[in-house]
View 1 (cartoon, one colour):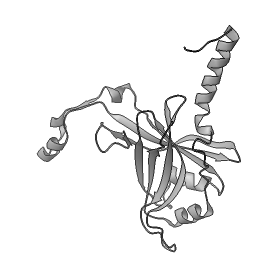
View 2: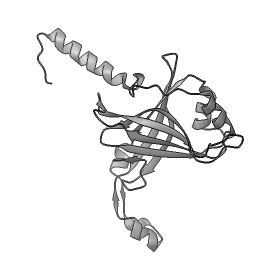
View 3: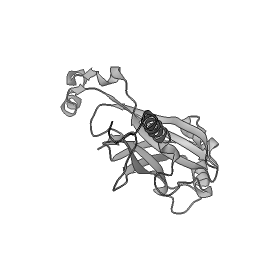
View 4: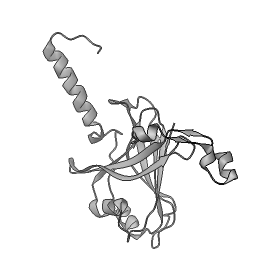
Length: 207
């Protein structure tokens, strides 16, 4: 612990403040702008029956916050044209994002059908115009995954064995979303999807 403290009370106050800062990280307006759900987003999302992607990119500058998290911009991108709307190919909506320290980008894709149930469907049904969304990513792996070994010989096809060396450890890159309505937490850290994968170029999280 660094710094100059005059009393035990000062130390306790510092510890409590740090804990509160860490816990409230995604509750703050971390980008300086607020990513709000718009009427346009709701209308396009309702009629979209194809893929949606969510991309993250770390912000430049002093972007490391308490707890080793990185401020980022998160973008919901409709990958194909939505019937009944003009200029919806790669239509992008901007929101707040959070990445783990040491990573600068992340991406997740959904083959989304609004008539199928799932976490993305639940999120669509929940949000209203004016809600604030904060997307965040973490490597949510456990010790079993971290210590897993996948020998190249496990791949049956010889071509696969060429492209897949021996892997030491797996990652569980997980996408979460928090929803805020009128500055109150409506939904905190709901898991939208996760990707179980070794540390290769197909990972959702990238440095």
